[in-house]
Image 1 (cartoon, one colour):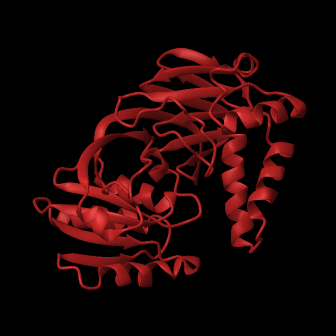
Image 2 (cartoon, helix red, strand yellow):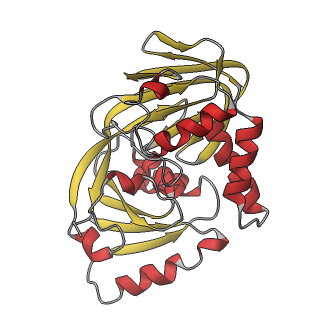
Length: 296
């Protein structure tokens, strides 16, 4: 197995490479380091290596946040002899939280890891391995990136306030396996392959990464006071079992979801924003080979 450590090259991630090199010192195995040059570069690089060396076993180790993990996974979907692993860097690496008790901070734990296969969600021509957000949640991620780029230390709070006050009504039609969940307006929706988004929100509490289904939860539009009452339940993953919350949402499990609107839909895909007026989302069964690190 040849290991390639794919490191987020963003300026504020400059501490990742020295930490990786420190852990690699003295270890005897074949590895390379690649530092990305911008958004989408990790996927481009992984695709290139996979195309050049289809018969060689590679493990691409995503070193960054949720976006880096997504880009690496997107490059190995349905490829033989190609694996991904994750080392935990970044403020909100939500994907690794699907595996409590695993040591995502240690290269030695990675080398002693075990192989498994997980589903991926195909979103038009993009992919997700964790959670897709639509509506208010997606706007929090979108504005969060804007405020972060502008240098605001309280960027998440600003983004949350912006989204809550200005984006609780979103025009989106949602159909899951032929069942219409929303004909016109929603507050937000989550499509979960994994369980957690936004660092702490257990948005898809019953999601399983290898069951061939996504968890679909659509929140109806609601008053601000109602949202304030529901939000703690949503954060703790209790919204699907709470009678008051269930009155304000629709839930199902599905293999195919279609989103459409006469306006642009802002969709957050593992924390990265993509925009279109129409999305087809499908579960790809066990499409990603994953190496899980050893337990803590």
